Amino acid sequence: MKLTRLELNSWIIEIAGQVILVDPWLVDPMTFFGSPWLFKATHKGPQTYTPTTLPKVDLILLSQSFDDHCHKPTLEQLDHSIPVVASPAAAKIVRDLGYTHVISLTTWQKYGGTNGLEITAMPSAPASSGGENGYLLKGGAESLYYEPHIFPANQAIASYISNLDVAIAPVVGQIFPLIGQVIMGPQEALSMVKTLRPRVVMSTGNGNVHIEGLLIKGVRPVGSFEEFAALLKESGLPTKFLTPQGGETVVLEKAAS
Image (cartoon, rainbow, N blue to C red; front, top):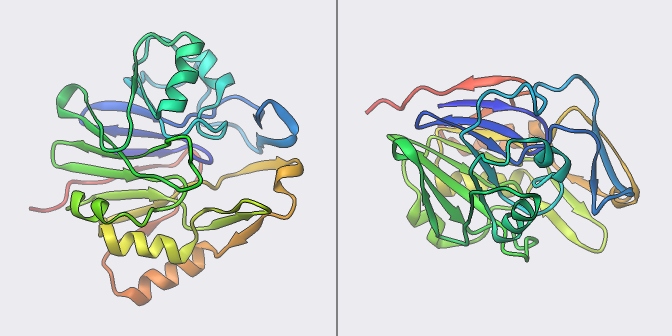
């Protein structure tokens, strides 16, 4: 399995011989609801990929309909014939953009791709009231769990996932005024690791970006990478913690049988 970190929630995941583009943001700026006064993000440095320099993408995977997961200016510039697996709300957005092969998944529904690829929509953050998704990806003997907001207190997840190779999730949280905590911090991330027991956990939701706007005023961070790393070490769990930077590729070998 090969994982390339882009920025914020964007990844390229290579599993089961498929190149999967996750929650892509490749075009500046990124705004919420088309309102830069509310929220505006831009890349601080050169981007790893643009829509025209991407490798061949076999599938686009969208977890949420929010702009930092389903970025319309980016999606407008990608090949609309690429299959898209998405939450119901995100699926509507890409269909409206003219994508021709869109698979909408609700919780526990599955998509079966080529080479034995299987994607299952998992219960996601309570803040995602529009029916948004986390995902479990399986290909051959490899597996990956992706949750960009908050790991839910759902016992069914623990019974569904076993022998997990990698979990991609936030480990530094955010609390928004009037909304509350929408991104999990170190304690919640440790709870996720204790539940899923991945070989590797990788941070997401951060990046080398400039953010401004009314929405971020009063936002409070929860924890740090260092705090999570310390908690993980104290737990005695064998899970390895990685913090790949934008543009960095991590190759994970198959677990020994």
